Amino acid sequence: MSTKVRLCSYVVKKDTGLAPNPFGNYCTLAVCTPNHMGICAREGDWFIGTQSVAKGNKLIYAMRVSEVLDFDEYYKDPRFQTKKPVVNGTWYQRCGDNMYYRDDSGQWSKLPSVHHRHKKQIDQDLKFPRVFVAEHFYYFGDKAIEIPPKYHKLIWKRQGCKWHDTDVVLDFLGWLQDNYTAGVHGEPSEMPKAAQVEIIPANEAGSCSYPANQEERRKCAP
Image (tube, rainbow, N blue to C red; front, side, top):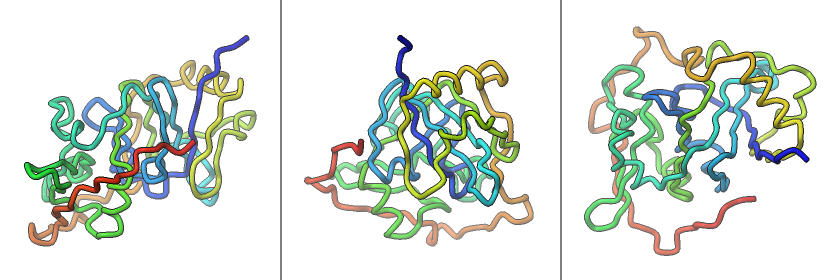
């Protein structure tokens, strides 16, 4: 009997380098659909993100979860300091997803960032404040690859996420690892050219301080 491996699939709405963030030797999911839905992934689980139906359902990335951290742990961990956003830095720095932390009073605070600057987005991010970290990943971005037809059942074409734990998951992962080396193969498909990068005044970059929610939801979605 084969070992079951869990794989969560979803559509990456915007491939900007923020979510997933494949930079700094780790691929991280901190502020995207799986996080907002409270998905409870554990070490050894996989995520795959695909394009929309209109773009062909190609594979943007796949990652194997090596650990799960809360936002404050992520913020303080020396391994992830380069993932903190720099508002008017390089594009890679602007994509930093390591933006939330607890201040001395226990309140959630947010570094200035060009992303998630509005209250609704921030509320979504803080509803389930956890980060999925991967040391082993495949990021294709603007070089997204075709998924063979026999694995199309793993593609989730609607809003939300879908868990899979059938034998086809192992077959798919074997195909992926036999045909591609782990690591970064492309750039984010929605990364603007240098001439398109907007300079953001510091006072408009979305820093904030939020009261810690003592009834913060910790349950995971199945």
